[in-house]
Image 1 (cartoon, rainbow, N blue to C red):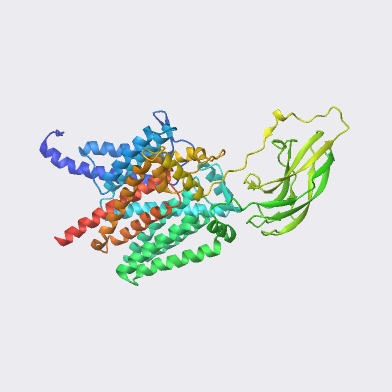
Image 2: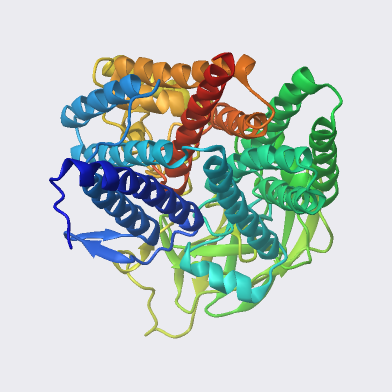
Length: 588
């Protein structure tokens, strides 16, 4: 017989089961999201209401939908009050106002509000999913497992394993190099984004390592140790300065917390051993020159520079192949290697007489006779092939690193030789200027300090409601008078990003949100017991990683990172609640 759901006795029997089902559904949705989070493909996986969704966004939408259905069946609302509820709702209100009041690009600002709402939903879902120590540990395990896979793929990418390199094209359309070295990105879009994601899971893994040591599970501890070492190596190979700093911060937070509570316990020694192994691995395997340059400069504006001594004028026959003596001086900070997979070569561009249009861009390559360190000079017998048409031209000398870059596109100055091309063929004529392509504009590179100064100008111009969240990248060129500003560049500081986007009120509320998060973790320290402390250590280290790296970058508009941040905040809130409940139970 089918009972009526309106029968109070039936409701009393069914509701707890359905309520438990809602929590299990929340856990499954979070678990699925953690597994797919670092594997966002470029091709859309689903079109919903005319909006193309990636595989990560589709997983999120389906997970939230399933959880909503489970809540409706259980006839209850999810518990959502927490220390972060008030500041999160206040920040949402401020973001909405700033988006609607944005001077331009309101659609982009509204889209950023939608991301915030999605992240807030994931936060609430995580809190409802992580209702026991076992569920918290399982979610952390899934996050770390995905991170180990991502880190391992990154190491294979660094080894130039062809099938891996080809397979990674579904996640991003380009590879990233600095100082001639590959910056691995693994399955994520950009190396710095990869670093932030891996920093979070690395910190969570420290907690699992402590848990395995405490439970005397040696095999699990050994696997975690090796996996965390692989993640750390991948972070180093992203060549992200803040990644190394943040990883060190996580180790200090975890190790320091264990030392203060336990002294030289086995778990403390395990974290110390991991820190030593990380330092040794990075020192041995990381590309020394590129890493040193990344650590000692804010950008690569002065890395690729050359000085040339070339003839002022030449006269060549049409199509003639000749040799020109050129003296090169390495005026940058990168050593020019003449061999290897990406050698440096002397080359040139044929330009029209005024020097603003390209006649032939890819000139012949002339090898360097030796490796050229910064400050050294060399003379090269450069092969030059003249254009096929008579006329007056400019021969712009340039250095290229094969398959990587041209110095001129990196902003380096070129030197040109005025050339007259002669021919006995009266019918031959040079192409008209209006049929030629413009010379590629050099990259406009803006360092962090310059970005922060521009941000200060933007805050002063719109202090109340800001310019709309995520609109800094679209407007900083206008405020900084940069004609070729890259609209993918953020303010490189998540605190400044919120203040510019949502005004001083938005910045203040964001600080309030973070303060409440840190305060809730700090208050439960005395109440921790041995069963929950390892989870607390990993989550606290992950929160510290987010706050520290946020000083130098902003990740709130990239799907894998902003969702990972909200999940971390949810785990922090859940573990604080569990610690408070257990502390209360012990007192009773």
